[in-house]
Image 1 (cartoon, rainbow, N blue to C red):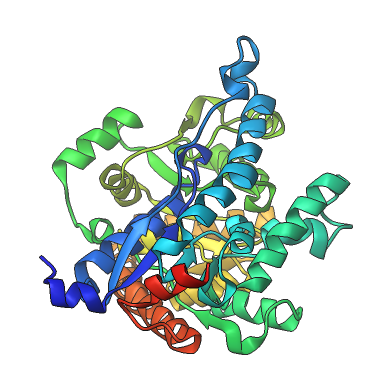
Image 2 (cartoon, rainbow, N blue to C red):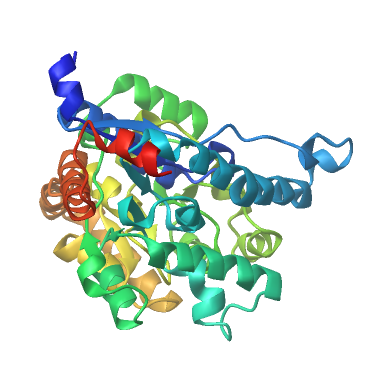
Amino acid sequence: MVSPLTAMRQMRVAICDDFREERWPSMDRVASMLHSQLKQHHADAFDADRICPPFLRAATRVPLAGQSRMAFNADRFLNRFWRYPRHVEARAPQYDLFHIVDHSYAHLAHALPAVRTIVTCHDLDAFRSVLAPADEKRSGAFRTMTGDILSGLQRAARVMCDTASIRDELAVRGLIAPERLVVTPLGVDRVFFTPRDETADRAASQVVPVPAGAIEILHVGTTAERKRIDVLLRVCGALGREIPQLRLTRIGDPFTVEQQHVLRDAGLADRFTAVNHVDESTLAALYRRAALVLQPSAREGFGLPVIEALASGTPVVASDVSVLREVGGTAVEYCTVGDVDAWRRKVATLLQERRDSPLQWSARRERGREHARRFTWERFAADVAQVYRDVAAESGIDAGNQVERWRAHA
């Protein structure tokens, strides 16, 4: 319990997290782990609340239209751009600092005092329609909305990035002044380092049953175009013709119609399983069970599945992009983005090593675990806490009294 004297010294932090209904598991995990770590290790300095309002349904409650994607997107827009900004604006006098943990919600910064607002920018993908309009063709309304999000990001006192690669891109593009950028790498939950969990292993077998002797390839993530699901499917399809035991498991949202066509063309329909969501202990068991994890993305902000897989002792093949090189280091094998044949050869070589060289394979797995130990949520929270202190000092916050002064000037 925090003593009354300690409470007077605390700074109140509003964590502006995502709507759970939008199903961004990685963003939910960042908000959850940050909140719990601040409570566990930094409660003497910060009193943090997650302040995302309830997601109200309007269009999705209409009969017949309720299940459509268009109805859900209408509700997303109303909640994101109408209700949430008004919610944070009304609650702003209660807090000293504000942390928007997902850059795609950075428009909230327009409703908050800029000098006390921090945004975490995980990648620049959300801004491609205004930064690279020729590559990301969108409507004028969409670009206007994106511009509002980007200007909110630019308004923040600090922008935290998961990697130096994203920090450097923001600086080189002239979007954020370098002195306002900070790198705060994400962490890996300890559950992924668990060597064995029979309960979780049984849950994994129930969620994704595989035949005895199966050689399982795992992919974790969304079906966004940048994830290059087409490469994943074509590589596994080619390998499946050489390796009858090969199976593909995917954790994430359902395939698009186009991706379903690629799945069928690759001959994987009868050796593929998809699950939309599992808890972390089951996910850790699926990582442990897999022969390899593939991450063929063209662009990433951090690549959390890479570190989770390594922590679980499962080798990874990832795209040779700067972010994944930065995160995976020498513990990961890399292939050129989109080069299906190179990916096929690399994966086949690793599966042969797994079969023929158990000592070499064991050493590879241990190198991955050792590398993953560098990434902890404790370190992440400590880095974020330092950013909070820096922003508080620059904005003249006197812990315990700032809220009352801000109310007087509001």
